[in-house]
Picture 1 (cartoon, helix red, strand yellow):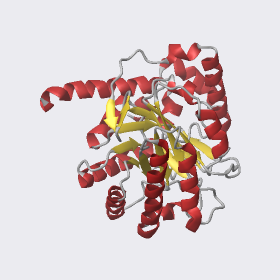
Picture 2 (tube, one colour; picture 1 turned 120 degrees about the horizontal axis):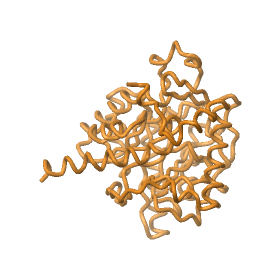
Picture 3 (tube, helix red, strand yellow; picture 1 turned 90 degrees about the horizontal axis):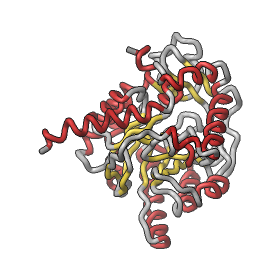
Picture 4 (tube, helix red, strand yellow; picture 1 turned 60 degrees about the vertical axis):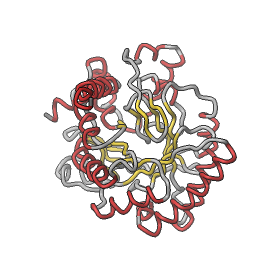
Length: 357
């Protein structure tokens, strides 16, 4: 089953073989630059899936289809137009911090091909808010643009609200939605912002800032919060209640995990950082299910983690997600995974339509 899930689409198989001979971060950069060159030459239009729109209403927005790109692949918003040509319903750029920062020392990304997984400890390496805003202020996308915000590594935890508020104000005119990342394991103390007192203070600050910005710009930009998969059920329910109480618009479940049980005996399995890919699928899907049961529709859920097939995407939606996002699956399966997920979701929705009627 895992081998089947890891099979690349035919047109991507050779490229993956070549890319996997390179350091993962080098391969990542090379792939994005090649995609940008293809886009500049007009060649990415041929890569767009020949599929009708399958719109879905989430957070008060109309997404052209329910398959999005997760944050982390394009941290600086430099490739959003080219990536949108792959057929995504939304592109989430970032994580971006107020000031540029280099992130953690290399090597900081590791493949675990036997498990269909990656471990990264990048540490929010990015060029900062000014560089991202300069790029995205004039982009034209068929997909919706989300921007994922973080705090700088040297910002004390008690000053995190300032970083997020600064980020929200800077990207507000250009983002269709904003994600608050409090769940990366690669920035010291960041996950402490998921604590009860810390999260309530942060959400109150951002809700007030959003009200001010909405008055200034004449539109309300939805805010989602991305959470960790390493939380217990009581913490999940507490966080969900806090998001609702402060008027937030969605929860993204989930970020990478610090758990190592499924990969502990594999080469690179004990590397520090966040684990993503197939080993995360069951846990992240269970969290979607737990949140959906608790929220009872009070807040939409965006499902992320270990999607390697159309069937995986459908399972996330059946667990209670309204949208899904991809990242590690693209590394192993290639861009054809986007079309596969879109087809599977559309087919599942059609099959369920008579039952709803």
